[in-house]
Image (tube, rainbow, N blue to C red; front, side, top):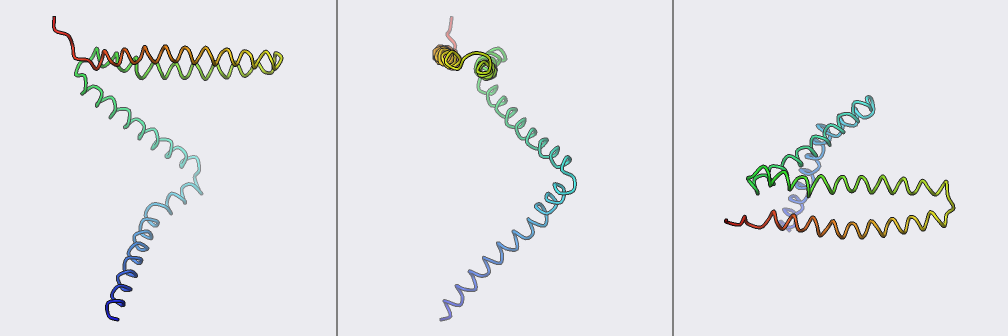
Length: 150
């Protein structure tokens, strides 16, 4: 019977410990954030956007540093950044914008022609992506291969 009461005491002590930790964290973090978001919503939004931007900037800088440590050559590092980061990002932005422009044609021309244009555009994008994928992979393989001795 004494072991059972000891187990009950330990379970309740764990429960009270977690409840206490939660209460302290709530008083320290959650309630001030709630107060700030309730009384000053623009300030709260600005702080959250700044925190998200700072975290994303930290991730990008850390990734750039790891990438530079891998190559230890500015030229190869620049080629890597251009071909494997910037060009795919620009390609994605261009594809999204062109897709949105193509969708706008639904309002100006008949729906059958718009759907046909959409299918042709998507087929062309798929073919272009396959060729660009092989292009990016060949550049990546050349970057990862050891330099040839002359």
